[in-house]
Image 1 (cartoon, rainbow over the protein chains, first blue to last red):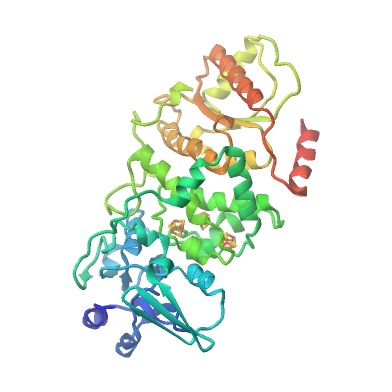
Image 2: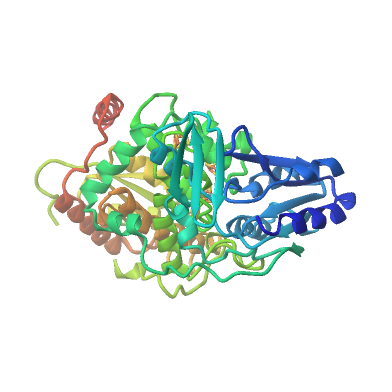
Length: 318
Length: 154
Ligand code: SF4
Ligand code: SF4
Ligand code: SF4
């Protein structure tokens, strides 16, 4: 990444006043990055940002309240930080935000499907629009546009929406404004097909709760309804109903709060299209309240407020 | 008005204590004829209704869910129903995403004195659910067990 050095310098300057700075560094193989916690000056050298900086590091913020935390954010991650601020889940004075112009991150699932392989790769180089991956002595060339995360194609906020230090030049949002294929296909489905679709997808769920744990807005920790015994929202049964119900709990708890960062779907080991559910829900929220989560630190989330006369609700018509 | 013909369906109603439950009572005291499919759960306020109650009710095999509270500006707790209105409206749009027909859930306002209105609301909603028929059930033994339990309870 072009601005990596600049970012390191910026962190170096700020580090003495901070307990930790969260960024990314190289992971277990050249295809993966890992969250990187910078506490000392020498940790800064290992920082790496680029197409593998997939993790939304804002997920760590609520757990670090009371500490002085620095965080490096992509545009989409910055929306999670804003949403956390909107809900008073973090204190603005305690976080120092480092932004950079993000040109997109990969979707590991797409790479895995393209390579037909899940093992360790030997090397990976990204030159302009091509990804070259070395695997078992062979070279695989993939077009970058084939493996970028879907969210990056329709990204409206590539530059951090909130930051204390911004490195590099701001870039303009992705031009693609045409519709979302998945969403459009889904919207064409009749009710009975949708009902069957979700049951089929949710049947694969192994109830690992990785979707919840990765979600920056799931902050309940030990108080999550999924684990509550009183009231007993979910049984321990391995039934589609319980798995689906959990996903509905998660989705509804995110109503008007979800910033579509896509962490839930990225974290899901079963490739369940969780983001589709959230995208559709957000579309409804936007229509109802002209509201998008995580863009304005001063805005109140729609379900935490009301109007005496609601413009778009005609409940008296029923 | 005569009770609807044919087999009863499972309709669950969440009613606030102060207005709609009173309204249903008024309808009863006034001996207004009503369909008998509805099972009422009394809650302190429409603002107490977690939309997840409704989702769980539907996933567990109910054919319809009706919510009724005090008219806007008449809430016993001043603003409970204003919050409820937003949540329930979001739910109204959320259920069809899951493949649950839009008409299976409605919410409305009935005051304690509106016995007649309550009668109309129940009748209308029950007719609406009968038109939709029994809700599609989630496959699996767990659902049938719940149905057996519900059958026993009815
Ligand atoms: S529900 Fe998914 S997309 Fe929405 S904020 Fe949570 S992780 Fe991000
Ligand atoms: S699913 Fe709901 S209860 Fe569980 S952590 Fe997320 S927001 Fe909290
Ligand atoms: S991450 Fe996927 S498999 Fe795990 S609980 Fe969530 S939906 Fe289920």
